[in-house]
Length: 271
Image (cartoon, rainbow, N blue to C red; front, side):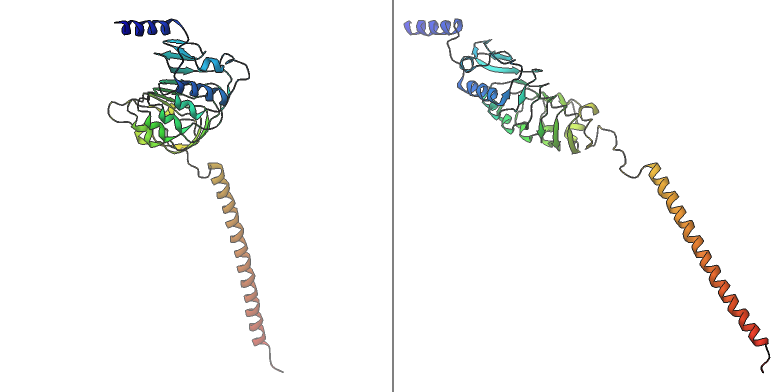
């Protein structure tokens, strides 16, 4: 009985005081993320090392942009803060994270493949940054993903066809990047009751093609070029034909002169 009372007292104490330390994985996650980001306008000035060790207390968060659930970081929303730098691969240490929103900043570098270890992640929004490189196919391992929003970046390469295996995916946007190649049928033409994605999810990628985008415009010669070539070749043909006629006339004229000379020589008497 006394033991139960001690445990109850400990739980009540932790619930009322911010002295219960956060999960060490969350602390490593926040520390490395803070180190990888540049904050020119000091929007994250409260993101200090002392706060990282006590970021959560139950459902209470002591960090701006972080939301806690049962003592763990489960949501990070750092949007439109003019943040620079890159996305730390150590974000994967926040293993309870369900929503990551770093949209509308000036982040560079690539999307870390280590995000695959965020197995509880449901929302990934990295849109409106300057992220480059390819979309990591390892994101498929985040089986609970409902939202992948990567629009308005500098992403290259093809869309990983494995992403079509995410059956919970209800929002997908990779528009306005530098992606190329075919749109995977598993994303562009989903079957059954899976949510469909229209052309707006893929537009703005010059070398990306396939349904639901309209057919690519022909990369052949323009009409004006074809007309110009036609006129040019027609003029060239005319010149060649005219030259040929002139040569034929010259040859004919020369031959007639020779024939005429031969006839005259035959008519002349011998002396």
